[in-house]
Image (tube, rainbow, N blue to C red):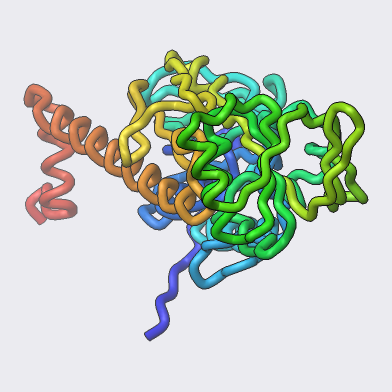
Length: 346
């Protein structure tokens, strides 16, 4: 049986909407769909800063394995808009207010939106090692996640450039994908005796001079050059970014970012509920390690939580209005509602 739905009227920019979602990635669009399907008025503000745009494909996305990231987002936009959600292309540069009365400034105040709730799906910035060539090949032959892009570099010559204690973890996982893995210590601490034994057991070579640069051809790594001029031919390079969630808007609304060994994020419960009433997070804003499918799932949870929060507020308001003292105006309203044209005895 085929399910159909009508397309509700999209909210106008000068309307006060139920929810503004900041960020039009997988998390933000999933949140918007969950809300719009519950007949909430939603505007998504998207600055077009998709984290995985450089990648050729998104992986571990059930039913869409390897889909180009921008194609996935285009499909998500179309689905969300079919339910009446509106997308505004722009950058949210300011946020203020409290639950039921938030104001968001877009592009320095060119546009202002007011909303009862806010979902921040603003993602994160990958702070990459300061090594020439890393940025040029990032998302292609320079990567960090074995689950996102490891299959694509299987059986190749893989270099792991150490930045911190996470280097050993990356070596372990990428050694499952290739028998040709080299650890460049770079900024990583000296391995312990136990770790040296583990590296030997895995057959991982270790290079101790600091990395000077990557030799790249377009976006393809060809070699890793270390201090002293020696080069090692490689096909792929693994680095450890620092994950810096975009927390500026959350802080502007009264929240505080949380620093972790891996970067910075917004703390929230599994539904995306934060310490600031009426403000929710989805995707990498609160879960830096979340891949595309996990980010979308968190968006659904945040959208559902925001809808539930609004429903509870609506109910409380209705109960309060019902409990107002009896008056002649209320009597007239109730009489008209119950009797209609019969109120005059006809």
